[in-house]
Length: 179
Image 1 (tube, rainbow, N blue to C red):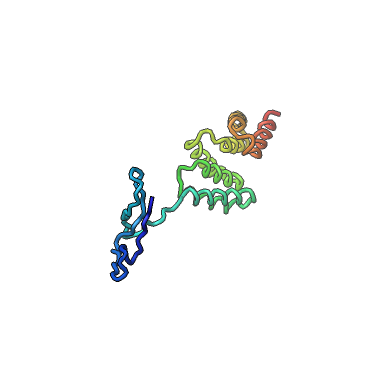
Image 2: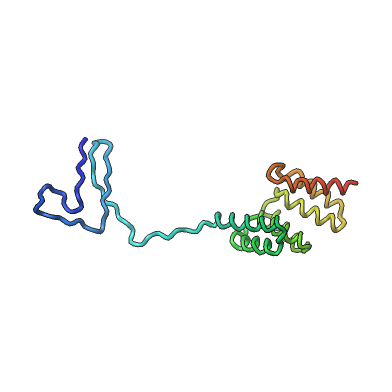
């Protein structure tokens, strides 16, 4: 198989004549598999470049991690702000409501926390950490029956490896209720 590549200035062997290519199309070398011949197939380049699309998942991950780090370092107001920004961008993200509710819980803003936990459960009923915090709120309110129910649900749903800290808190809170 022989492939002949033409220069951009001339596609013939006559050095005396120069042919300029047409700038509207850019040639692309392709090989026809049936005949094994090399062909030059023009491809049209779009007039306007396609703009890069934003990736909300990456931004959401960044905001979630930022909010979580602020929550862990007990910067609760900043954590609420980070999770609020995340919720504005992705209003159906249950874990964002659960996390903002946790920050509200630590700020002792229990009604705001309950509202976020209820929204989180409306989006994902199996979010164990949400049940943990609801159980802790019921415990503070003196509603032992509801606290036991929520804490037991949390223990059943919380992942023992990924969410070890929350699991230990739920188990400890439930054990303290049963004394």
